[in-house]
Length: 291
Image (cartoon, rainbow, N blue to C red; front, top):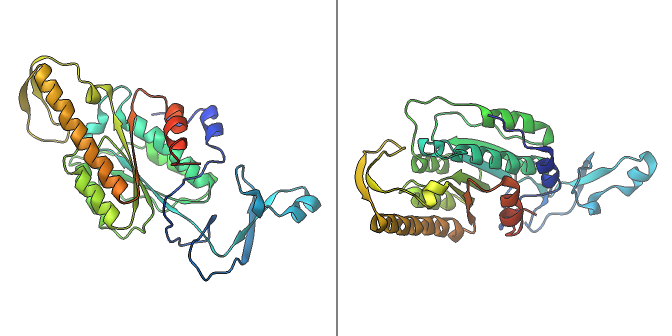
């Protein structure tokens, strides 16, 4: 699977930053000013300038002497933990392109933004038994992140979305922005999101759905096979059954949105047929997820 974003997408992402709604405690010096009181702004070190940096921290004296732009960093600056949680459960394998492919490419874009702006990127694969990567930092780590995204993980006993989210919530990961990229079609997903919120994470849920998920065009006697391993269900697909399905989906999606937003988080639906750049521009940027 080719996860290399086209050059125009990388250009679009330059200078953008993840924009959390609440302050999270950092562990190492980063590029986000803390809101904690009682700390003085103490110079710590220099680093190279990157496009989009706040010019208030540019050292103009060094620029004048050496013709080299460098940034001053301070000891009260903190990094932000950006957890990118990608649902790799069986239901994500459906659609064209697959929901998983769309999730991976969106993860690549969001991860690039986090890495370039000095945040700590912590990727997790949901639904599979795999040890998570250690924290990635800096633009140079993007190649490692992209390789991780493209790696196929075999697992004879995949876990459900809700089980994986609860396991992450109960882990010792530090609180931060938890970006969940999933179709969210697990009946217990909303309760699992609430568990994440209860652990102090600001949850950003992007629900990735195919056209068939949203507008099924089916009729006649059908046997539905649960992609997550549940028992098959026989139905007669007619206008009444389809209306009932869409109403149930609407209610389920509203419960997901409510679970994320009640903790100060965000929620959006991303249809797989929508171009990545359009979703970033018209949803993530316009609604303030990134700036």
